[in-house]
Length: 318
Image (cartoon, helix red, strand yellow):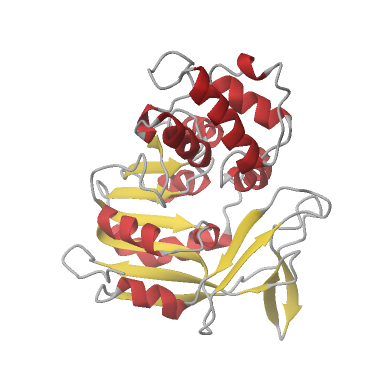
């Protein structure tokens, strides 16, 4: 995200004004660049109307003279501006939670796998860090780590910084590479993020480039040879969000010669349903254990994708 402008909107404006996407910032205004003239302004309005399915009052379009004002008007109309906006709204539910005293079960599983690497001074990256719950847990169990968190949400990053003030936090996008650090890390974690992306190739490539030692990706991976790409919305809502279940086979085909394995994870304790958020997972008893389900009536099979020492290995190029 560039200065708070979602990629979807930024790309539209960059095409209209014939400038690099990096120049599209929230404070960009009509007349501040040569190509944002009256003619291009009308082209911009028309392109946005077509893209987002809205119609502006012609008498008021001249007032949409900055990118920030344009975003504000779209959001006031209930429009999803960015590809990941619905995800941010879904995840905002978690912003009110405090898991510091009750860490998630998969936190413990991830650290059990990475334990030999989590030594004082180790460089650790958490991709999709949200409000910093996992990094807070890491800090409490493994003092002395050099920790960095990445997320697309400024709101979450502000909370994360307050929760884990010794860590470094960066606004970045693992799929587009925008904002990612230019350094490598000894241990890389990414949990509950991969389902957002229909195409795993970009984030896999970026994780490999960020990893000096080992990466651990916790999420849903289909053990069957089927790739499921879906969009979901609440009943009666026009907003949709991605929910993808990509196969282990597809992931492996993109990793090529890079050493990796999938480690299954089962929820060891019951997890009650939160009725306010039907997309949030809960458990049902099954054969002495628990199945993880959600409001889409999906059984979710979680695993950790472990990628080991990828630096000198060959990633498949599609």
